[in-house]
Image 1 (cartoon, rainbow, N blue to C red):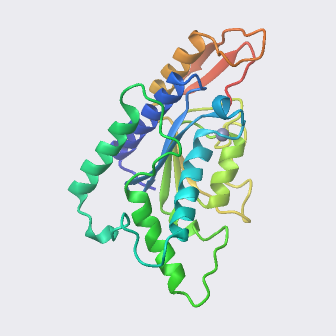
Image 2: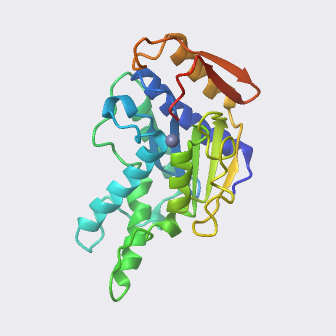
Length: 260
Ligand SMILES: [Zn+2]
């Protein structure tokens, strides 16, 4: 677990930018990024309304982007893909510039994100190393767990505590750690309702560390913006929700729970 709070703040700011995109697009505003050894490898935001799919939470979107990129790399010839230079050739300054430019392209302006979504520049480079290792084995065995060593080095930054569904999924993929903003007192799976990171699924699935409360006030402020104008997708009759704050906890009344 990375202990440096400045790093947590850096990546949580990016997660908040993706929460802002979901707010702009009329979704319950939750955003996240996934970071591998302090390199951005994925991002996501809640899309349950646009997809009409209650599982498309920010965390699932971020995981899906990694899976899609992995699959597309698998289909490329065994030679090194043109966009997948060896990570060792990167220097950190180029990486920072490239990532900043990528994030600015996504989060600035009011354009909808490109679909299919573009992977961060680091993702194919890092995944290629794992694929190359698998290809060097006598029989390449692509199992659902092939990316566990990758995920074990990843930290998810998400603006709101993962719900029970996402917290279980993060255990299944073997995430290294989760850093989140505000608590999710109705559905939280990382301490509020269940503790799926801790012991609920062990020893079958790996546990992971969590840190809570990073930029919780900012995450709550985005929720407040969303609910102050009423959830346009709430069941009829739609009733504006009033977020009630208690420390880094957030409650919604009357009952029309936040989906994350
Ligand atoms: Zn969720």
